[in-house]
Length: 615
Image (cartoon, rainbow, N blue to C red; front, side, top):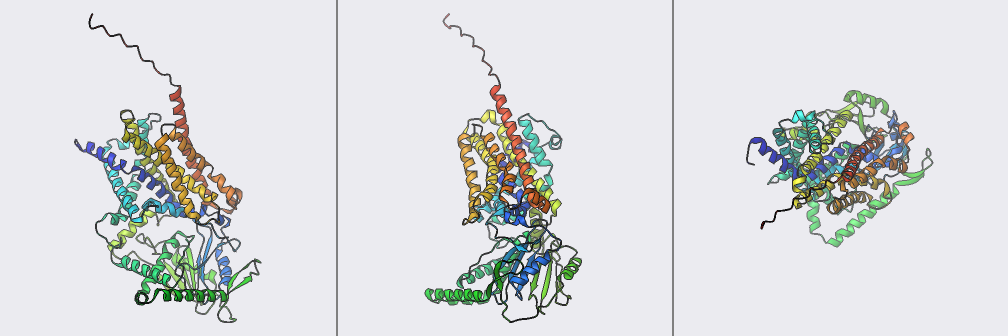
């Protein structure tokens, strides 16, 4: 690092980014797609494509719940939104034991009030989201530690890059195609400068959120305080209690992005609320013979199964003609209490000053009914989870509860909430989400062009040396191979049989297998049209994704357009745009290879004969 400031910054920029540049490319690419992880999950669940939006989806939800769980303990209704067109229902029938997670669940097509067939097991967009911050497949702590270090080096590279480039804004307006090194410089500068505020924000917030993994001490909770530690203990004790009683704890992801984040917290709170009793039970169990405890568990499980069987009757739905299970009320015939949900729905939206996302009905069809309407937007940026206004009504339509959360309590919680909301885009509407997505695409271009720029500048001097060849192989597998793996992941979603066991894990295995295969190819055959072949494979996978979609989805192209399923159609459009970029690169490489092969080889001039020294 000898020399002036800019020379030192150049050295720092080069090596701080090169060490982890392939991890950074994968993080940026998968993190960019994570802005639309709910939409990706919808595309990867073709069973939900039959759903079409209607003006009043509430009628379909109530009609279904009145049939399957009349006089139940609770109804939960997740309304369709711009990110998912399906109607999600959860319920706890009368006399049923409360489940730790979501309990009984159904997904409806709001236009027909029909239950959609059980969706396939898929990791969806959540796999890409988890991969980008914990490198799915390695131990979670190790993955977050690696991503934290990569984020720190990325932040150093951004700051040093701003200092080292004297003509950064002048080069931004330069475009020199076909100039080899100069072309990669232009691509790198454009990707860096055009979304520079986004790059600084997304890197700093990501580093802040993972800072706890880089500390030498254990802070317990990244938000500060002992609340997270208590929640963790409560959750662990709740899980132990569930295992001790022989209950199977299984949860499925809700259609709403926010519900997928909030619902697990309910299990945490329940675990906290049972700490005292659980501790006593655990001490008792430790002094009890293991066989006796197992017998008790089996008896409890059999009793519960028998109660559930007796409390349900397999009958025929008079509206659909289908046979399905309906909850049988414990009490005999009762007159249901009618509540005008449509009027309450309109009143709730007026009070909340936003659209309603979900509804919870406690003690439905009774005098003690309570209807809680929950908004769709956070009241404050500091709430990365929760913080959504709510209003509740009784059977007479009177407001009994109102909750309009303000900012998070405490400076640490506020800071953490704001930075996490910024990083994950919890605040973003559809337009802002698209802007974040395209900024992420520019960040991916910045990282990828930086890796190729390093190789291009050193090709003549270092070609053939072990270090350079290693970087070249990692560039091929880390950039082109990543697109092949991503395309293979989406293809696996539609090709793997629906009824196969653990098919979600097989989708993920396909992703890593394709990526590993690309790495082997890059190591062995990178000099034999490696870039051309891998980019062409990725281009084929992405250009045929819309074709695969309409061949394997129960809804065709014209019906999708007529039904207004723009979430699914937008995915296919982005796949085509990605394929266009990949095929443009293939065309450039193919043209370059033909030019190189057709270029005449210059013959060397004959050397002059050396004079005889003896003459």
